[in-house]
Image (cartoon, rainbow, N blue to C red):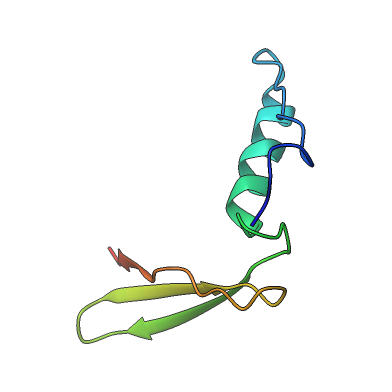
Length: 72
């Protein structure tokens, strides 16, 4: 688990949209425990028009809760 002593808080300049976007993408793509890049899998269910997204960390082996998205 990540400790507060090893990582400094991310300071984002609110006037810079590129920096805000980069920070948001980094937050979504990295493991909250070990900072490894997450691996995503997507399963398509056409009978219910849904996509199920599952993410897994190759560094610590944690699997995140699947997210279900409805297709339009």
